[in-house]
Amino acid sequence: MIVQSSRFRFLFPPIQKRIPSSLSFSVASSAMDSASPSMLFLCGKSSPESEIAKSLKINDTLNLPNGGKVSALLQSEINTFRFGEDAFNVDLFLNSLSTKRLGRFLIWSPLLPSTHDIVSHNFCELPVGTVCVADTQFKGRGRSKNAWESPRGCLMFSFTLQMEDGKTVPLVQYVVSLAVTEAIKDVCDRNGFPFINVRIKWPNDLYLNGLKVGGILCTSTYKSKKFNVSSGIGFNVGNEKPTTCLNTVLKELSTTPNEFRREDIMAAFFNKFEMLYDIFINQGFQTLEELYYRTWLHSGQRVIVREKNEDRVVENVVTIQGLTSSGYLLAIGDNNQMCELHPDGNRYLFLLLSLLKLPYDALEKFPDRKVTLTHCRTQLYFMGGI
Ligand SMILES: O=C(O)CCCC[C@@H]1SC[C@@H]2NC(=O)N[C@@H]21
Image (tube, rainbow, N blue to C red; front, side):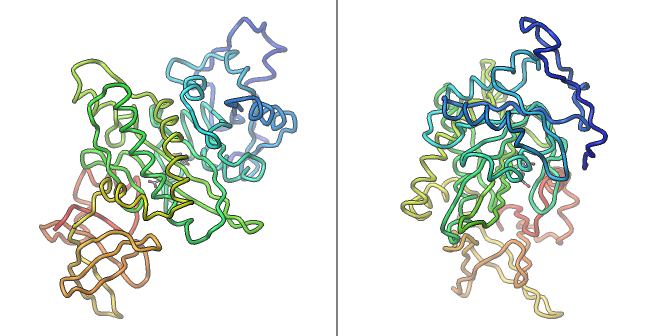
């Protein structure tokens, strides 16, 4: 929804003028609606980032696409509001963060259109490595112009990177996926939780027990010889809908009442990502490939490639081998011919169907898949090996 500035109502006039600082201001979620300016709390891990926060606030720098308004506030102002127990805990996140560059400048919002819009629209005003996290989004974006359902409990954040080598840009999304799965393993280890097997479904989905629980959206623009990359991650941590979530699976596996916290996962993500990203930039994706293939769902998967040749459709069964250097799927046919598979290329329209050799529209008949498809509709469907 595009919010027109004439409709803005300032629900939160400068708080320090209205109430004594010892009182907190209760913010019912019903009071925050999509027509209000989005409250953005600008927070820093250390003083350089806190100085950036002050300057962005004073200069009223941040805004949204289509004239959407924001209200910038500082970390010190968070406690003048009462957002509820389940609001993102900025201190918890910053205290667990051990990175040198990434995630140290944080924008938190209880409600905004899309974290991705914040970082991509304000890219040049924000330090590289800025992260924006929201408790709820009302215009969450998925890939291929899909919407991302953004209920409370879902971990939703976007962050920025700047890259120089255009060849590596398409691969960075794989490093992001890997950092999410590695972060979850790390949080499990640190808390003594049972192992939770989150897997990567190429190109950009995260799966748990056969259901999509997360997705990654990477976008980039090219400016002054640099690629400005925004990466957005949505991961069902505490929200059972629309598929399942980490905490539901953890509950099933545990005898004691444990819960994942979004703050721990996001901090672990940046701690892992910074390390994996440095390896990726310095040594190339090959160094991460072994770990990636252990984490994805597709090694040795047999799939049907359906190639449209004018009005003729040719089907071939191929076996997935890995990724090509440009980040597409590398497969080998039964005739030993290697091929590169694209999710939405013109050359191939390929649908990966199960042993049952279902008709292509069969996906719609699977109630659990339907949820997945509304979450992410690409032209590539995996339905297990054949
Ligand atoms: O599976 C997909 O289609 C990708 C979904 C990406 C969703 C995340 S939630 C945080 C960030 N903000 C958005 O609007 N989208 C991404």
